[in-house]
Amino acid sequence: MKLFLKTKDFSVSGEEFELHLNEDLDMLVTKPQPKNLDPYYESEDYISHTDAKNSFTDKLYQLVKARNLKNKTQIVDNQINKSKKLLDIGAGTGDFVLAAEKQGFEAFGMEPNNKARELAQKKGVRLLANTEEISAQKFQAITLWHVLEHLPDLEKEIKRLVELLEDEGVLVIAVPNFKSFDAKHYKTFWAGYDVPRHLWHFSKTAITKLFSEHQMEVVKIKPMLFDAFYVSMLSEKYKGSKLHLIKAFFIGLWSNLTAISTKEHSSLIYILKKRK
Image (cartoon, helix red, strand yellow):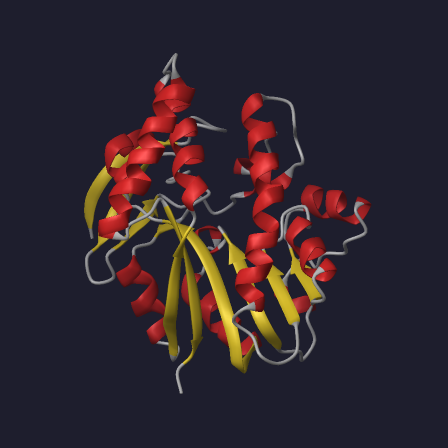
């Protein structure tokens, strides 16, 4: 692997990290990868483990998250034709699990962060701490919304996902895309890298190859259009831009416009099924 770029943890520690390119998979790997990642999540700035509404950025995130929940459940619902039994991995504070239940799913969630699980509990959502707590169950749908990039032992986790999935089930994975215009524009400052919490940085080729080894195939790819704006806003803040909202709007807009032809949006949703 060769050095792709150097960046740093802008949101928590300020420590520097490197991204190395795995050319066979067309995937970036964060180096070094801390043995204990817990301290890098222990921050109010790590919003997916909180329900914070303090800053404008927090409020915007929570507003968009609420509006996206229905779209996410609809994406899953459109792909299944049997039981509506769903497992959400990396469930955060439980909002997607709650939304799925309201849409008629028998929904389970897994979240390793204690604080996030406690917040979910207050909403009436009980989340499991790890997949080992799941008995001999299989699911019609498994979702990972911006989670795969966080999992330390990637091969082991992918194998486990496939084992938990019914033969005709669907796996829905959303991840940042380092091939997008906004990633190339912001380079070191691109918020989608989010090192060291993001250990892996995927392309379409990487997702296809990694899951193909486990007899899974990508059947559809969908864009997450708002991510270009939100990631650009964070990236502008990391750069210290005084007009970060205005600049982020235009970079996010241009990223989405260029992706009409390139299909390389800021974040992508991959829908995968077991190969027949």
